[in-house]
Length: 522
Image 1 (cartoon, rainbow, N blue to C red):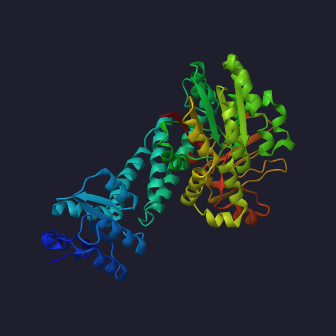
Image 2: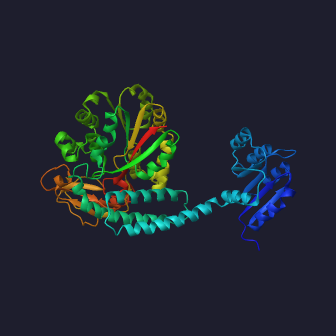
Image 3: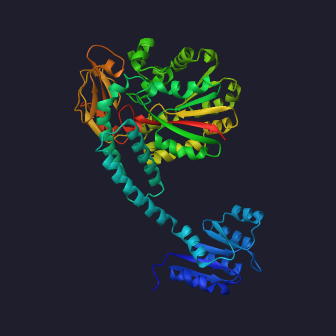
């Protein structure tokens, strides 16, 4: 008894009568097979019937396989074709592949070969989906059990790496129905991650760099300076607000040009540009930055661009302290838009004598901010999957991809990282503060702020957390999980405006666990 039909196959071969056993074998496995003996009949049938796959003999009398292939593709460009040939000439195969065959087999073929080739084309998505579902559910239980253990910083990096990979895997399997399960698991992990930071973060920022996890101020000393001291040239790139999952969609685009090695670090708190990126370029925590650049936290300097205006100065000072022989050869470039990016792409070749080039890119951060204020962008980028897709498309067609392809031919090591990530906020928390309280959505500083520890971490003593002391009774709040802060005044207006937007500054895995990628040209 035949099983459920698995697909309609057109098999074209001028010796099709000799393949009856093969055809019957496929039919017994549930495939609906139509055999024809020449290219003309095949082209006619393709124009009249919807087939799922064509098996096409390359060497036929009359209209040959390549001609038949061309005519089939003119009628149904997306129809999969498996070519079957006796001819193993490389030029022939290249020509067939250039005409977009899906696969090819070499005669003589046995029924099992044909079956596997058909299943690979017609059941690939189902088989892959079954495999993904089974593997994720196994991983789900492993991660859930791990949350009951006493986890280390390395454990959290491993957990977030796995979750980010599953997020991307599900982009290719949108119909599995597991996205909500994964979202809930990410939130469960972020709940525990917040508790973990409650216990350890203040210790981290006060420990010796050799004994704590890698934090923002450690990056250049740990990953860049050793290479510079070894006489290597380094292109150091910071992509503002790039999450790990977004990087994982970029990475395959670079495999043809680079060997890729990935390390990880934790952004400092607040996981926001004025703090985290300044910390990267200065090699200091924000309290020390305040001592060296006291005007940065003045009230007229609360805009992020003005608060990051000292980066080049900070970087030069850091290089002067650790690599004094190189401080005159540092080139710092900040790119805020596409036009200046393509301009930088043209000019970078003039900087090749500089052993250290630092490049800051703002596109991903700008997209996150614009999405908060634009209904159109919210429609285009409704969730993390679409955010990844848009950012990957930008990267693929961007000036920075052009730069990276060029630098694969130079004697530079490329190091790419981000200053912080972002999280899509879902749940609001009311916060009461005076008019001096900062306006940030995921973190706040002001006088006598308070909130339940379930929703945020309270830093009553800024110096304990290596944060700027901005006056008597000033404290900081860092939102946990996917919470965001809203004032009671105009509560409903701000609640609806910010819900489901991408924000940063808080203490989630997405904001704080970030890649440091080392690219060495092949």
